[in-house]
Length: 360
Image (cartoon, rainbow, N blue to C red; front, side):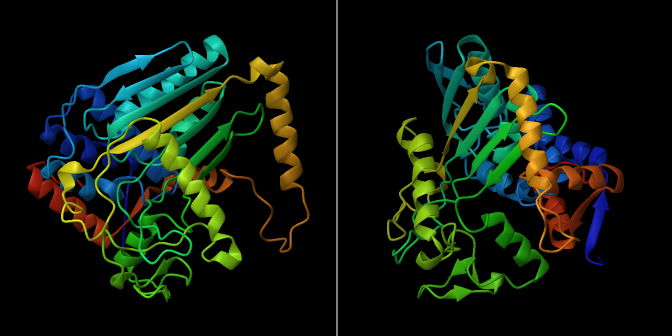
């Protein structure tokens, strides 16, 4: 596409590292954050990789994101733990939390780790796949501070996109990897539509009167009014709403996460220093239920059966969750990562503000 700039994964890693170095982040945190962000872009999840960089810079400027946090474990048992991220960028504490959950699962069969006082952690699926790469089932959830999802029958937004990710390892196949927002679409997709000037499908976003909105330029940041998964009550939006509440309970209510006021009429609603995020991670060792190798073999058989189902269109075979991202990863690893012209300029501006060299 004429308005797209393609960069290599290595160049993008160096660019992100330069920005985070200018922030004064520790080397280990830089390496972790860059790895998560670039892997996300390689998998084709453009809304959650480098596309979030300007957002992270804004949070840091508002004092909401600390470049050098003191992450600590508040409580711990053999199967569970609660961490405080001290306003860290979300990727390093989340990797640490999932690794801790995996270690607990391998020791006692299951591990659950909650994280509070964090920030956006990228794509939820990165962390569930991290667990499956280590041989266990992984689940990843996060709350979202921005009130941008309109609950079914509500006039105003309250919830975030509150994603769910689940990954299970197989033997021959790549892991089953589900990564989904509990809204009809992730908020980053609206940002992409806004950058590219493309119309949104009806059912993604509602206007102030509850009617479908297709012009992304009229969906400003912080008030996008996304629909819960399903889009409307007739198509099951109450189910997406219920799933979003489940994520909110795990990530915020259970962890003791303190979020900003969600009332859009509250004068503190825009106070970005009050906004932090909660995450929740679960790891399950299949060996607890019998033979771990047999589980992985049956995962192969299950996914093979799904893909072998007769397709409506022979040119569009049945897939399972993760297939698109794996295919995109192969393409982008060789051809590079496409950035829209608008995102390219966003990265340039972040570099200007932070004093980092613009390498792209």
